[in-house]
Image 1 (cartoon, rainbow, N blue to C red):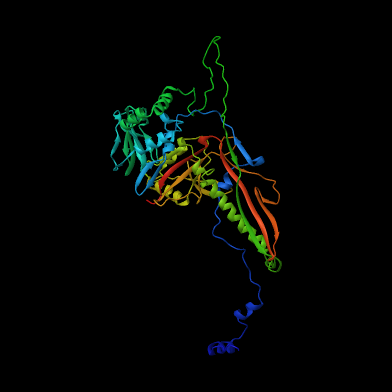
Image 2 (cartoon, rainbow, N blue to C red):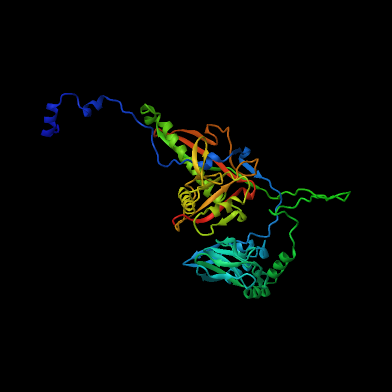
Length: 468
């Protein structure tokens, strides 16, 4: 049964003086693009990391031996608006360093009380007796000191489990060195020295551990916490010179290569008959490889074991002084290391940096990266976009600062090349054969990791507000 054309169409065809375009297209060859995707990003982290060969799939980072008294940061959990200290993390505090008695740590965690402070409230005053250990569970607290001429200066900003008054864990009040002032609404967990004293009386093992840590001085070390190398200078005559040696970390970290994999399936009929003008298998592999590389960059940023956000040393983790990422905050982050090669931030964070510079009347400038691509910079260091850095529900994100390269003891990428069926460095496509349904399978695999050679190679400006 043939469809009857509308009268209007027949009339137009009768009055046409040449072949119409609709009819002509049945004889024409179309010009086609290769398959497009929105998921591809610039992947600046993968492009700017120096990639180092990890023979045997493992890379060991040897360092000088380091002595640390503790990071003075604990983890907190929240349930139904109530915060609680994670007991095991109390062992990060100097008086409890290396304490492995779970019952004692749990008893301490149970004695914390939750308090709230409004913006501007004084949490502790300089020179006053500190009768509470304070853990900042939520919000930001500024530590203020008197400057050279009596004006207040910001020493540090505390957040995310950082502590005040750890000397309370010895069972006696101490004296606050700085004034602690709430910058935002703050939820703090507090532990009184009296509660600690009661627990010390009830637990001889805890008292012995605290006294041992108090009376055990750390070996000589430099400002980075590394074992000191004794050197004499400025002497005359023939004094006896110091003898020394360089001690090594007895348990260096080893990085194994991570893996991202998928199985690509292509029907043989598609591969055989529909390969003009583009190879179907090639296009399928191209898009699959792009997805693997995107996952690779995501893992290098966010993986709990190797991700950069999870491997920042506590001394290199700082907080914004006022919320948004200001030029002062970038300077603070930049000053924590030598030879910072790049900042890495979410594109919306970069926009927030630009807004703050504009608000202060500053021109951050731009620099060329990779042959002419211009990016926002600060002090000549490019601020490169990475949409793998998460944005929280509260509208906060982070800015990473990296020194890169083995020669500069920086951050490096790890891979292994020369693998069988390798199509890109560290990425293989292994044919798996054709099954009974005439479907050919390919195992597509990427091997990678990232290593931070020394702690100050990587820093982060945490919880910056980007929605203001």
